Length: 405
Ligand SMILES: *Cc1c(COP(=O)(O)O)cnc(C)c1O
Image (cartoon, rainbow, N blue to C red; front, side, top):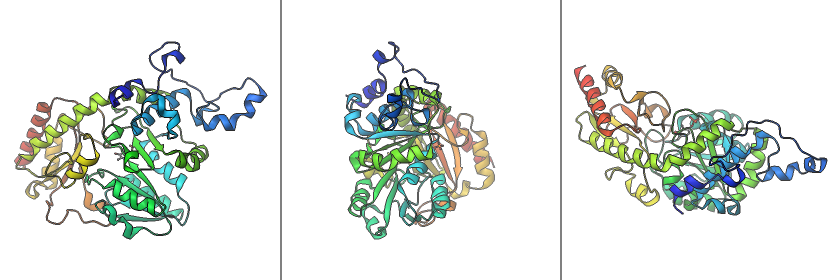
């Protein structure tokens, strides 16, 4: 079975759903038990897919979790139970990062995060986690096996995010995982950019894989949700008790929407990937653009690793403007003229987005701009499902407005 078939078939069984194609939406908090004997079995039932109280899961959320496990592992829906891996949901994508960290880490543990990490993850790591006594350290995302220099006896977790938020560095995940495991540390991946369709984390040695379902899985800018998939050992030891203690869950309507999004995700992502590359190639030829940062393009420094580990590309990338077009009013004129690229946070839906970003303000360790590379303003672009010609015409209009300043 291939991923598009898995995306269609996983997480539903019409014979258990009164014949309906889709699983029902279970609106519930409370679950009642017919007998005292049943009530006494709660702890055991809760460890599996049993329904005991909605905080711990409902048939709707379990359906989504099973479907995501099939895709993260690249296995058929029927094999999900036997795999031992489990997926759990969170209220937001950000909680998909923070909750497993709270489950795994203790005061005195050492945590490594790449310098290209998602901004809110960085805030959490150097805010709350540090306040709770975790020693957090930033590393160069391009370090690969050199991460061994940063390992300490108390290193418990190495976070990877590939490509990185904003600056899109592709990380050598297998090299990092090998060193981390040799030192007894776990590896957690933020897989939001590629989704499990284009990167299979567990084949690369990852122990915990999360994604913001808010983005490509939801796909329609109408839900917030995260998912966390882990090996059996990590799930049983850390995530299962952690989820029960923290009490994050997902709304049944939103879980239903995420499942609906999943069905068409392979098709949407293929189109996003193609259009994203077409727009990026068009941008390469523009005078206003000093650099296009997109790992699926041959000139990109991360291209070889991307080719080795990924089977496709997301449509989120960045451009660096020529310095002579990087003034505040020029950037403003460009952004204000765009009609199809909307300004705002988040991405992953059908609509294209543009966002001016300042990597130099986020970095702690590695310099931005990179030595020898363009120093202009950086604009993050997300390519949605509009026609490519309309999008490039839109950008051309934006550049015209920029040049007129
Ligand atoms: C958006 C995003 C998140 C957080 O998701 P939210 O649902 O917005 O909280 C985490 N990691 C990455 C890489 C993201 O792009």
